[in-house]
Length: 249
Image (tube, rainbow, N blue to C red; front, side, top):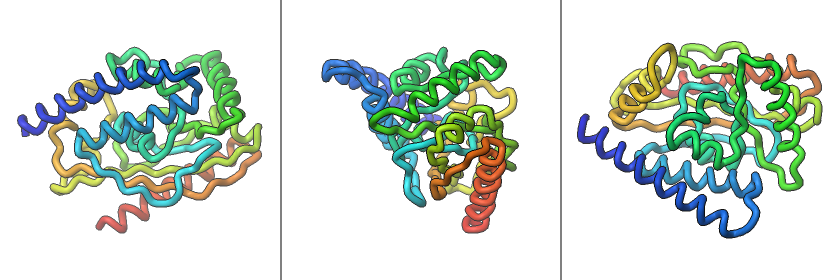
């Protein structure tokens, strides 16, 4: 167990170091558009998952535009989703201050939100509106629960940051993440919730063997009302979670 943790920790640090070198080289190739940032993020996520030996099964078609809403289990969701499609994330502002990970998040075009500030939410909505209208569309990915959970339920979706998509009339696609651990360990052991620190959880996660993820995408849909969009996408993702649980039993 300790050997596995150490091996994966070394691989993680090595890949993070290489990803910043690749971003520096990216800057030499001309203007760094949000599309180029997102594609750099996808390549980086795929390398990170490979280095950590995390396999991912994708069901459905990843969207190429619009808003994507997903349940949220852990920071591990980010490379899993990013590996499936180039996208720009909306994330809590604290992540921007994390060593290495915060810099990588900024490099791939993440929009940071202070969920305790109305002014921040307004600014983030404006940035999302701009991204959703780019000439070369890139999906914007949002975790509407507002926090990661232990996976026992999909908690209520906040609708405020869904508003840019409904106001513009761009498609909204659901995404459902589930962790599968080969040794019979419960999924919640990989979920990051409660008061556990990031460092402690990461060290624990690095020691979990046989970890894979199932990522399922729904069909893109158009909504005109943000609250209806929040309620219906929440119900769809909750149903996806229940279906995948039955399949795995």
